[in-house]
Length: 177
Image 1 (tube, one colour):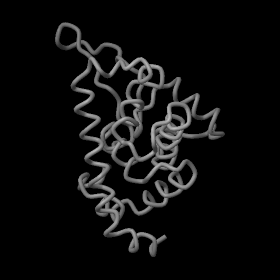
Image 2: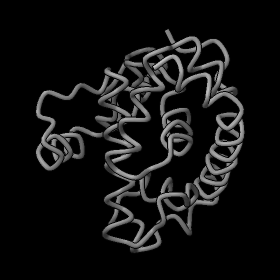
Image 3: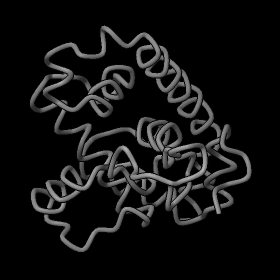
Image 4: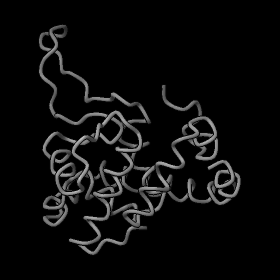
């Protein structure tokens, strides 16, 4: 079950008491702030472990194939997830596992930082890269997608809110862990 209040990171971490440690571990490993990880996962799956793209219907009632292999908390595609498993040394990682998903998101953002020079605090551009892929971002594919640029700005604003909220409860969370 996803958290009850998706807009308050403190309430999320109080409700899902192992999630703070998962995001903290990923932040320490990859250098990507907790608020950035959480804002991306919120956008991608609304914290639903087995989220998938919808199935289109043919003739209005026959389910067809999904348009993407995106799955789980991070909505990672099969090939990108396999790349992560191999390069990050996490071969048993599962997209339905929150800690593995945080590690994936942070790894992808750290890769974007290393290869493209995007700061790990630049949620707007990290999200554009996350959505379009490294090559798509380099080709500026997002420039023709105003809806995506709007979404990236929304993710950025959520990360700022999450970061401000986290400042008010970090000490409490640290004491619990």
